[in-house]
Structure formats: C-alpha cells, structure tokens
Length: 141
Image (cartoon, rainbow, N blue to C red; front, side, top):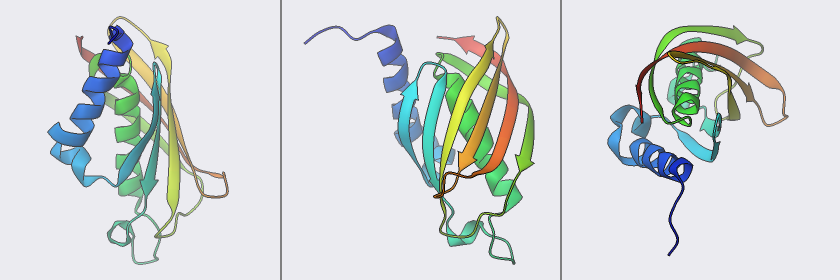
C-alpha cells in the first residue's frame, strides 16, 4: 500500500470530522460530492422542517448551509478556521424538497485569513443563493 499525500490526509481528517465528530454537521442534511484543495462541493436537501409559512426555505437555514459550506471549503486548505463575517444574497425562493448543489471556492489565502465564495444551484442549475465569507485561521495543520 502506497503512502498518502498530505492533501489526502487533510481530506480524510475532514471527512471523518464531518461524518463522526461534529454533532452540528451530523444534523445538517448534506452529502459531500467532492473535496479538492480550495474547493468543496456539497449537496443539500431542503427538508420540510427547514421551511417558513410560505413553504420556502428559511433564510436562516440557507445562511447556515452557506456558512457550513464555506467553512468546509476553508478546511480543505488544512486550516482550522472560524467565521469573521458573512455576506449573503438570496436570489430566488427555494421550495421544500429542493436539492441544492453548493460550490465553495477559496478566492484568497492569506497568512491569517482566507476569503471564500459560494453559490447554491437548484435542480435547474439556477443560482438561488450566493455568499462570501472571511475566516480567521485559528490553526494550521
């Protein structure tokens, strides 16, 4: 059996944390589609208990999805990060039962901070939410 690279080690540690060690992530209805250095792709399902009285996804739930996606994206660099600020644009309503694909991309990697952008696409590949966040690097692994 060959040796695994440092990047592969980072992804294995991140997947283990997402699946087994984080109660918060265990409660979110998402599936990891792909992790690469500086990018994460996740699939989220809008469960019935995540909608408002109009039957659309709550803005707070979508913000939590964005924050989670962008935090996971930051972790693909091998850093332990915490959110400094987040900016969201809600582009169109998202009904219950929708399956969204979220794509997070690191757009700046500094010594102490990183900046990540994300967008969520619905089943018709329309952008429904865009976000941008700054993260403070707590620890480099």
